[in-house]
Length: 152
Ligand code: ADP
Image 1 (cartoon, rainbow, N blue to C red):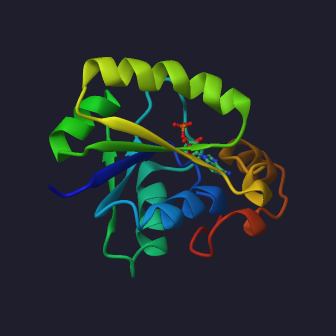
Image 2: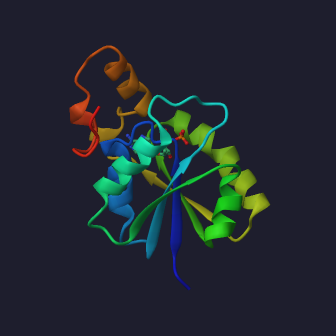
């Protein structure tokens, strides 16, 4: 059976931290779907179309990686695309505390899906989309923190 992983997130915008998680996971899975969630509670700074286009451009030469968007529960999306894994990155204990109940509830809702956590590289652990949005909003240069394809 194909090992399909969903890497869900807002990716508002996609950062070199996200890129690193995907690249380091390539050997673990046959297919990685970067799934941009249409989050009802979080307003986004960048349009869904833009976020998807950026990610497509970043991975255009990596056939294992595709990009999609979804609405609703991540486990339902996993069921739809027949994914066996949910991939998430962990930067801090705060990330862990946030992710733990979600992963456990997801497991209860859909037993066939395993959540896989990858520890961020130390040099990337301070990078977050939130801080990047703040830099952009205030006219700073966020380019060191995002892949080249991401242009503000
Ligand atoms: P969400 O809105 O679901 O938290 P994000 O777009 O902020 O989505 O993040 C998607 C995933 O990428 C999450 O698992 C998050 O922990 C992880 N992530 C974010 N920034 C980094 C980073 N710098 N290094 C590793 N993982 C990261």
